[in-house]
Every structure is written in structure tokens, then in C-alpha cells.
Image (cartoon, rainbow, N blue to C red; front, side, top):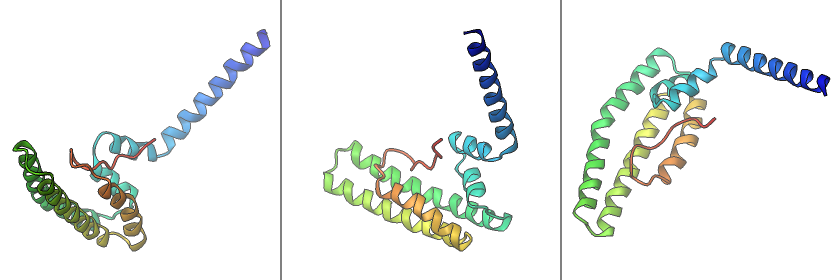
Amino acid sequence: MKNFLLTLVVLLAVGASSYGIFYAMNDLPAVRRAAHEGDAMAWLRAEFQLDDAQFAAIQKLHDDYGTVCSGHCAAIMAAKRRHAPAAEVAVLEQFCTRSMMKHFRRVAALMPPGQGARYLAIVLPRVTAYDHTGAPNVQVRP
């Protein structure tokens, strides 16, 4: 029993040390932390290996789209607050979804070709399942 406990403690220490070394030497956890903390742009830059010019262009596109997106959200929320017919809310939500998909395709066009396709494979399914209750979620899951 004494050897079992000693072996268990040694294994736990080796495992914890190995994890700590891997974590410290790998920048992926930093990318995941950024995504978990809501920094979608930091995630985007690291995940899709964007150079400075690509990132600047995408950042501008993102900033410009922010006002468009806010307008869509405001219209949807106003319609829901005034208890608009479901068909009217659905039209507003469909318009919002199409607008987001167009925006994401513009973003993908600014990325390296393989990365743009991978980006669309990640974000487009989230947009089609979007429930219009807040910004679409791009967080990386652990």
C-alpha cells in the first residue's frame, strides 16, 4: 500500500509537470484563452495565420460591419418588443442572417485560400443555427 501511494504521487507529479511544460511551450492555450475571453479578433488572427496586412483589412471590415450588425439587432429587438407578427420578425432575422453570411464570405476572401475555406466551414454553420439573441459565438471549445 505504501508503494502504491508513492507511485501514485510520483505519477501525478510527472503528469502535472508534463502538462505544465507543454502548456508553457505551446501558444495554442493563449489562443484558446483569447477566444474564451471574448477576443474573437485575436482568435481569428492566430487560428487562421493572418499576416499584418490581412489582419488589418479584416479588422477594418469587421469594424465597418459593426454598425450594420447593430442596425439589424436593433430592428429585430424593436420588432420583438412591440410584439410584431412572427412573420415580420422572421423576415428581419433572415435578412440579418444573409447579411452575416455575406460579411463572413468577404472576411474569408481576405484570408489565404485554404484558411478562408476553413473559416467558412467553422462560421457558416453557426450562422445558420443562429437564434438572434446576441452575437454569434466563435469561442473555441476546450
